[in-house]
Length: 201
Image 1 (cartoon, one colour):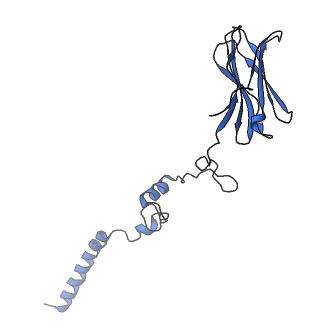
Image 2 (cartoon, helix red, strand yellow; image 1 turned 120 degrees about the vertical axis):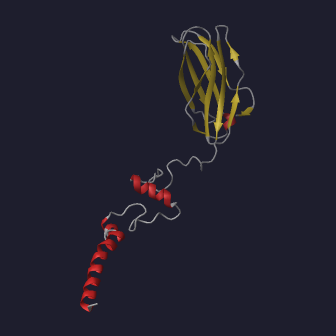
Image 3 (cartoon, one colour; image 1 turned 180 degrees about the vertical axis):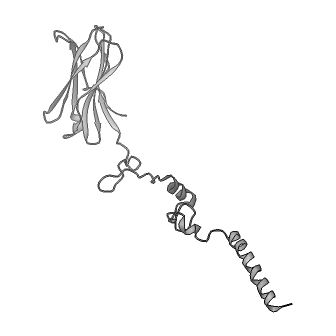
């Protein structure tokens, strides 16, 4: 056979096979043109210590990891887990008293840590609204008063004076609660903390 004819047939065969080989290989620049996304080359690596699946989910949704609230100095804004438990509350309470008119009360001096204050527990079954004045007296003559509105309902209630820094010995504090009609004409009951030993709560 003529050598020229063989060379021509070879060139035709190569020209016919080249398109088939290109179609099987696919687009050469597809990965270079596509934007980087989860699982593609060029995507940022997942953060150290976090799973690759979790990091990919954050990138796919566009959500940022939730940040914990912090104060200006960098400490957590809610250090409840690290906070020390509150100290016990000590109470010096007088006896439970009641008046013929239907007022029941018990008055206490309370101490917690460095603070001292007074509290009176009461129940009003007179059927009328009353006025109560709660006083706490310190060992150096300082007196703090609180005016308490006592409703006409017979549900138990309580009234506190503001907490103040303990001055001297807490056992030297005394408290008195006086219950009267709203007009102030008649004193119905006086309840004090001057009897009874200290009790923990």
